[in-house]
Image 1 (spheres, one colour):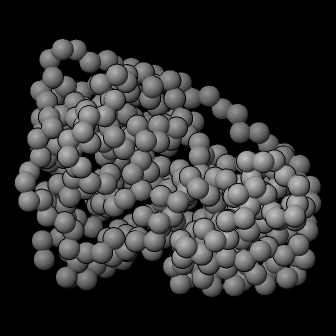
Image 2 (image 1 turned 180 degrees about the vertical axis):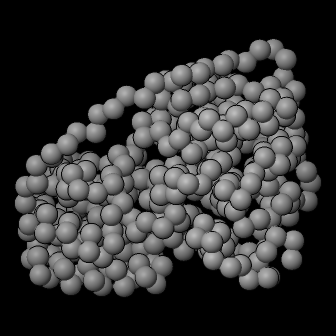
Amino acid sequence: MDTKLLGEELKKLGFTFFSGVPCSFLKSLINYAINECDYVAAANEGDAVAIASGAYIGGKKSVVLMQNSGLTNAISPLTSLNYPFHIPLLGFVSLRGEPGIPDEPQHELMGRITTQMLDVMNVEWQYLSKDLEEAKNQLIQANEQIARRRSFFFVVKKGTFDKEPLQKLQTSIHLNQIRQHGHADHQMPTRYDALSAINSMKDDDTIQLATTGKTGRELYEIEDAANNLYMVGSMGCIGSLGFGLALSQPSKDIVVIDGDGSLLMRMGSLATNGYYHPANMVHILLDNNAHESTGGQSTVSHNVDFIDIAASCGYTKSIHVHSLEELRACLQEWKVDKGLTFLYLKISKYSKDQLARPHMKPYEVKERLQRFIHNSPLKGKEVSGS
C-alpha cells in the first residue's frame, strides 16, 4: 500500500508523534514518520513505549514502531505503565517469523507467539490490511479504542508498505558544556531529605516524576500534589517518560527523579535524552548503591561514573552535587539557565518505616496531572491535602 497515504490518514486522526526502533518490514513507515512527523529514535522498544507515553500525557497522540522481537523488550512498560495508568498507544509491530514464510532462525518462535503475547497483555490488535481503503477503516477502529484509553497494535506482515525514501537524516551532535566530578566530602542525606529539598524548589510550572518504589512513595508523603507523578512498575523507564513529556510540554519544567537501580536497568535512555536534549528537563539521580525498596541488595552503581556517562551522551550539564544546599542551588540555576541537566547525589540507605502509598489509582494520578498541564479546574477532593 502507499505508505505516504496511510501516513496522511494517521495525521488526520491526530497521530503526529512517533517513537520506535527500526525493522525492515516497517522501514517505509518509519521513514515517513521521520520525514513528516515528530519521530524519536529510541535505544530500545521499552524506552520507545515510555517516551511515547510521556508525550501522550503531555497531549500528543502517540505511535510506537517496533519489530516483534522488540515486543518482548516492551512488555514491562506495556503491562506496568500503560495498563495501570490507562495510557493508550497506537502500535505497529512487524511479524518476522510468520509461520510458513522463510525467515531467520531467531524469529521462528517469536513469529508464532506475537499475537498471543498481545492477547495476554490485554492489547487489542489486528493484522494491518495491505489494501489502503480497508486499512483506513482499521485506523478508525483503532482510534476509537485509543479514545477509550486502550492501546491498539497493528501486526504488520512482510510487503505491506511500498517504498518511502528517507528524505532527511537525524544527524546532530550536542556536546556537554559543564562536567563536574565529585570530591570526598559527601553529606549523604537520606532520600526523604533529598526529595524534600527537590520539592521545595518547585513552582507552578514544575512537573515532578518519581521513579518506582520508595522514591515515589516518599515524595507522596512529603507532598501529594497535582503536578507529581509516582511511577509504579516499569522500572528504568522514568527518564524516558520524562523525556517524552518534556518534548510535548516545552513550557513546563520537567524534574525526573531517578534511582541507581532504575537507571542501570535502561542506561541507553541517557543517549536518547542527550541526543534530543530537551532544555526543560533536569534528571536527578539519587544513588544509595542499593535496591533499597526490595531489601537492600547492592547495585553495581559504585563502579559506574554516571557523570562521565551523562556528559558523553550529550547532557548539557552533568554535575556531582555533595549536599542538599548544592542540590537546591543547582536546581535554582537550572530554572534560570535551562539546558538538559544531570544532577548526581549520593544518599544514605536509610528510609522511613511504614511508608504510605498514594490513595489514588495510577490512572487517577495521571489524569490529575493532565488537568494540571492543561490548566483545567481540579475537583476539591483531588487537591493536595484535602
